[in-house]
Amino acid sequence: MHSEPAFHLVLHGRRGAVARWEPGVLLVQTRKERHRIPVAAIEEVEVRGRRGRVLAVVLASGDGVAPAATRLVKCRSAPAVDAFAAALRAELSVRDAAERGQGAGTVSVERLERPKRRARPRLRTVAVALYLLVLAWLVAVLVGEPAHRGSFTAVSALVCWILSPGLAALGRLVTPVVWELIEEPWRLRTRGITVTGELVRTYQREGTWFVYAFTDTRGRKRTCRSRDGGPGRVEITYDPERAGLSRVGSSTTGDLVFGGVLFLVLVSPLVVGAVVLGVLGVVQLADLVGTVGPRLPIG
Image (tube, rainbow, N blue to C red; front, side, top):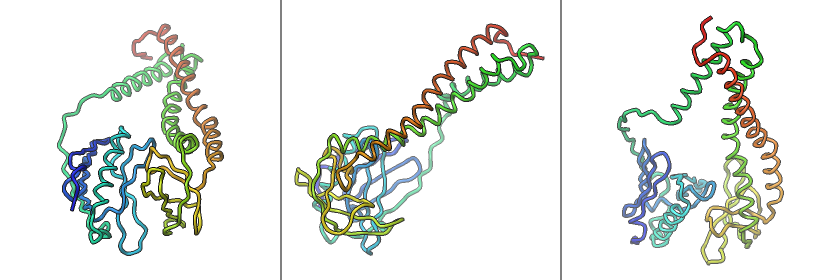
């Protein structure tokens, strides 16, 4: 027996991913594959990721092997993910007990052929092309203009033009990682609720993992997976607005201090350095263009 609420929901994620519900089956389609996950294969549904924008399922395990969490769709809208997850949980709640435990073996994957699209120039492509043209012009000035060969203006413009995008790209990679280290402890510190949970099982996956069951203030059964813990009952702090965010214990000071130090040591120098070098590079470039002109230097 299956309920109706999930049938009309469609979750659109990034990079063309789409999750939709068919009677008894969760259908997840990307640009390359289509996954069909029967309701019998789903143990539970979780919301994960930064700001609760990733839908994940835990596949049922009937052989004692640790359940495998599968990330499905990363969406820009956290409320959309919450609504889709809530509808799937409602579907799971009416599932017959005999249907459970079939595991990942019932999940089918179909390869899709991507339709060929006509290539269109994008803003990023245009920006990269302009950057490379300016870079080539700076190199040509250093090589083809004897008066500027080795000059401070030309060399500093070239160095700034190379280093500034490099620092910006490195900062773009580091910032989300550091932000995630800070955001989740901060949410638990400012919005978290602490309850007691009881150990229900353990499993091995690159170490020992503990799985605790607890009931939130709205009476919903939830689970918390952690490398920290032990037998018996423990305190669990969870975010009432994000189903997948919880941790054993209530202290977040250490994580916040560690994340703050990483932000000051890694992110701040990269951002400041990229901005400063970018400004200096533009100033030196403008000075060089005013002296040489925009023509292509020929020695």
